[in-house]
Image (cartoon, rainbow, N blue to C red; front, side, top):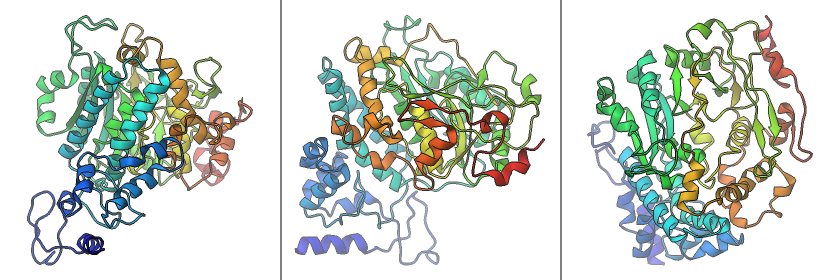
Length: 527
């Protein structure tokens, strides 16, 4: 009892100091009785067992099996495990690596802190993959789930609590994920060369390469080109790398978890930039793309705009297309292939508009390979760490989560980026999955994980009581739909019936008008 009381008093009692978390001195007249405490300092007063769990980013303790069989949520298991040790942390807390209470203010995580954890997690992932080399697809999922539940999820909840504040300086954070991509370095060079304000551009690069002398997949016979090193050693790249404008997470080919999880990792390298943009690593840019992107976001009739479409091919001359309205992503279909689980797939973008307007037009969907948004998106709609091995489903899920969280989707007024679509001879991440485990395992593994997405979208065959294993629903509420608008309303507006697998033509996107419920903006699009 005394320990419980002492822990509580320790957690709620501030200690005077005049040192800020970044090492700078805070003037005494501004903060005479308060300091921002390093959360690691607080853990030193906790029981040894809890300190050990925190240090390992593992707070689930002995309750993992209860999470796996669905009798407890991951949040409940975390609190039970910590409270069992007599830490005195209340049941409402988010507990992670170093997290102690929602009510305790902690400094934002530093980039070094983030990278240290992510690199540590990737090492654990590698060890798990080796151990489960010959596992079935169910065994692969089970091993991944347990690893994330013990380590990555608690850390992620702590990260979300300690995200940096959003800056108001016009900065753009560009998320770039590269899988063995020889065009990656040209993408980085073009982004900086064509930017109007390159000093305000910050890139988070997740580089997944084969580093062996003989690579087994794709056209490369030796180690893949090192995008980061090639860019940073170039004449134009040195300046930006020395300024800390390129943040890197290295992963080996066999450690790849697919494009969605690569974007998850890249999102954690954001350091408070005002705008968030994500692209593929084989793109080209229009001159002044950064300033034009911000201009579009500011002209969109929304407090939370997201601009996205499927970019035109990189073989197109972007400068010549500047007088033409950009394409818009309006169509969706239910996949019919046996290996796609009837997931909703987005169709190509088309030129619907004869007149180019300065105001972005509403659109129903986002494309994962190109979008730019208010960076609070990373706080409001965080990437889900329980979605590995996917090549399908991320776009419709992200579209629905954004819309239900109060974000409005628009197409760009002009094409700002081009995409290299012809990559038939390039390595594919599912080949790396087969290399890490056994040949042919990716398709059934993806089909299994897709059930987590389908459950969130309301597919009746993936309802909560139908899904097995129950681990597919671990912490799903933390990464699901928002509360600003309903999923049913979204699906109706975009013309999707997940029960009947039917698509209804809605006309508003193709004609360039606002969707139902947004008629107050009609006057902006009457041309």
